[in-house]
Image (cartoon, rainbow, N blue to C red):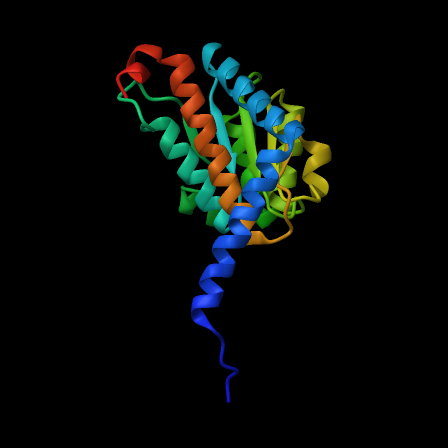
Length: 203
């Protein structure tokens, strides 16, 4: 017989642990500064005519696509689009490269195709050890892109491959992902206010 559990307690615990991680993030002055620094890197990239590429697997792929959509579509303001692309959305490309070269190369080859010096790669991995994401970061560095890593507390291999790595203070994958999308939303809001102040003032 399956062990019974208290569903209401499970709900409360999920919310409480999510809040606890966000509160830890809020108290971490160094991490808050890194969130700002990352936003400033993105700002400079757009001001200089560059673009933002994003990659991740599973839930992190969803986060990459979510952030790309907010940038290239809109967040709060009715403003011009910003060039942002999640590297997994072309499934024919993804499956072809995975089949011909191995899954580890799916993002690095697209970085090689689309990335240019001055662009930014936002590389997302809760463990920091996803081979496909780490290889993409390595390729981006070789090509002259700046790499912003989003990871959990340990940082993994991705931390060493990033120009700037934001380590969410948790080892719990769902809680890390919730903070990653929060950070992405913060970037979107800052970029709209910096790049499109007139539109933002109408919010």
